[in-house]
Amino acid sequence: MLSSRGVSVAPDVAKALASGRAVVALESTIITHGMPYPANLATARSVEAVVREHGAVPATIALVDGVARVGLDDATLERLASSEGVAKASRRDLPAFVAATVSAGTTVAATMYLAHLAGIRIFATGGIGGVHRGAEHTFDISADLDELACTPVAVVCAGAKSILDLPRTLEVLETRGVPVIGVGTDEFPAFFSRTSGLPVDHRVDSPEELAAVLAAHAALGMRGGVLVANPVPVEDALDGTDIDARVDEAVADAERAGVGRKDLTPYLLGRINELTGGRSLTANIALVRNNAALAARVAVALAQGIDLGGDR
Image 1 (cartoon, one colour):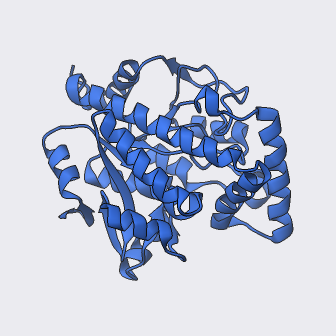
Image 2 (tube, one colour; image 1 turned 180 degrees about the vertical axis):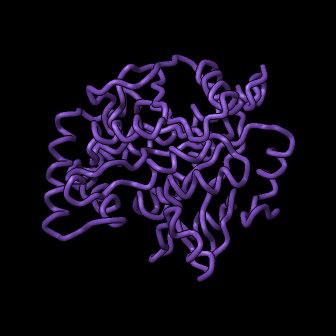
């Protein structure tokens, strides 16, 4: 492992970065908190394989015994997937967890921050966090939104999780100056379903067009990230009305159980999976793989023809 600014970078990732090859960051809360074992391990392995199949090097990011690791070997993936009690780290948790030698899956915010430290500019995930329902009373707003406003990493996702207040999430992103780019869509996807009825800021229709947007964003010196909205594949999408009803039911269950803060999203995703008879998990796996494929293609386009500094 090579260390840089407190981050331990796997040799294959470090070599790729040094030679200007395409690298895609991947988060680890999908392994530690997003899916049950062994589906989480199978998904982590398959997503890394998808990135490789499309010509890029995968860099799964996590805290392992207090070390911020960028790029994980298979034994570490299995350990994170199968261990109980692995923590969940957002950006704010990183110093304390490093000092206490804690192992943790990293959220979108923490993964963005560590990817940036390692020099990785594109990151594939499932869906971002956002403004939670009832935030006008609870002030429960994901740190992902502020991270997107200040860290120059492009995040490829299937929109924001449909357990959230999507209109308010998009309003916060607009206020923070974060561009929301739809890939092959004019609508912001709602994670399990392809549409939300809400518009994206701009649309592109190919990885090359998206790479040009990211290069221009960097050339203009814009300090934050770009949110790339890539809808779940048609064949794996869930009906929007049906999933909204299941989300409402899961939210009500969470309120009755007193679940909140960082425990809320894992609880809701697990409950929705139960309520949909496993269909939401199938969609989740499909959309993560789809996002990884797009991120890899964009990373390759950038590495081959469009400099991240804006030179062509």
